[in-house]
Length: 294
Image (cartoon, rainbow, N blue to C red; front, side, top):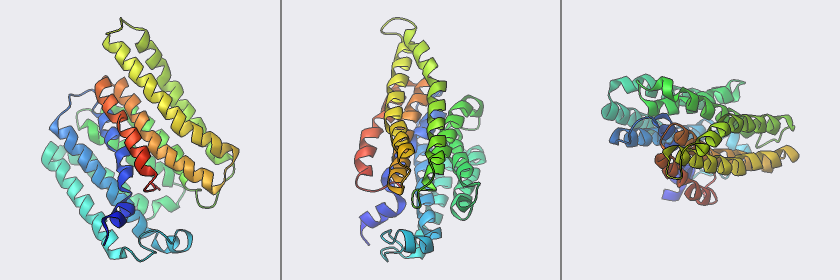
């Protein structure tokens, strides 16, 4: 089996939208080996979810998306399920060994949410909320057992963004009324409106070398990229809620997760780490053109 087929199955490049969750959750803490290992754990859970998604949707995809790895015959269903189980087990093990068993208080519910979503909840009205919960838990996964309170605002913002993207994604095959992209665009606008005042305040504090100005400048730059990516695509989908436009808005929403994470990481007091997260954006954008994240 070709490596590219497995890359397509797990949407490997889309995992670049995951490390920023951990970075935003751990923004108030110093960089460490534990943070890196939690990023790896989260990426593995993301890939597990993608493989599980295609396993669970193999019959629907046979009619709607026959080119996907399983319905096209390039990946056996059992292999996709096996990868999902293996990645989940490995992600849980890495988290426990690198950060202690207390970390499993978040890792296990996060894994459970990923499995619950893909094995049935995504087809119910609770689907977008479940996906949003998974992303919010991923931020708390990065915060660690002692940092939940500090990471709660970032988790809420990531969860809200994910909810908006998920509602659009549910209609990317059939199309939808303008109400769907309008709600997502409203969510994006609300997030920016909540974060932008802090960016402006921080930019106005101190001299050119001030850490506050660095935080503000990084937040402002990241929010500009976020609006230009997610907001622009959602506005186009609002004007034309066709399946093609909704797919573009969904992909842009996944890509737009990266600058949002960077803005939240900077706002948490780690502007240099935020800049590192933002460097993933052009890489992800290039790779998304080769392997669809949806």
